[in-house]
Length: 250
Image (cartoon, rainbow, N blue to C red; front, side):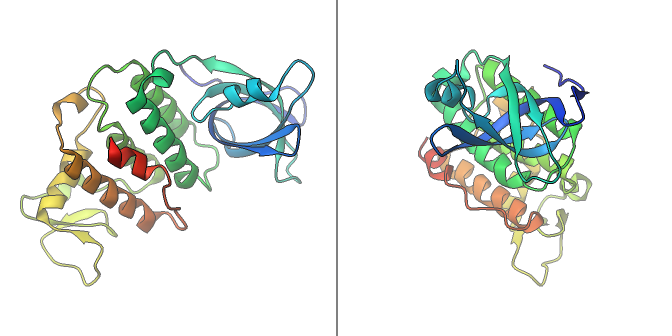
């Protein structure tokens, strides 16, 4: 599922791999779609329902986290590009039919909407996201903590992955500095040793070992809280997650 290089069809048209983050109906025959793309970073585009398409088909095509090949007509003088073509690039086999995976998918889509708001071209980050979604689709165990692993691993691409080498048993974790320390900082954005240890465990999670890490619902919800706090400290105007309560209930 490797992303494809950008192909310029004309001076204004660009073909790229894209992941749908959000779709909003616009007027009678248009949708505005927020994408994470491989070659443009974040992109907001308009899809106009034309002959041969209907609103129902468009809604299915632009579901959150759908992976597409798109051709956009992009004008740097305009805030929104136009989608000239869109087709499925990857068909999920289990994700749409699994309640847990769907809840995780909607959370990840909203998370990406905020975490990549100002992202420009970053092929490595895009490939990480697409590969993570592919893994989630085929995984048959260990998915309950997928979103926790996803958030901490993505921070590496955004430039604020915690300093793992600074960890020592009994240390606190400074959320602002992204490192473990034995000194209490002057601010309040830090984790006490018990939560700091959870952060250290989180940083060791990978798709291949994820099923070994067991958490209670209470522990998982606590980790979600401080993970989002970590992101809000490093990304200005990170929004409130509306999908969070669904995950808390699972």
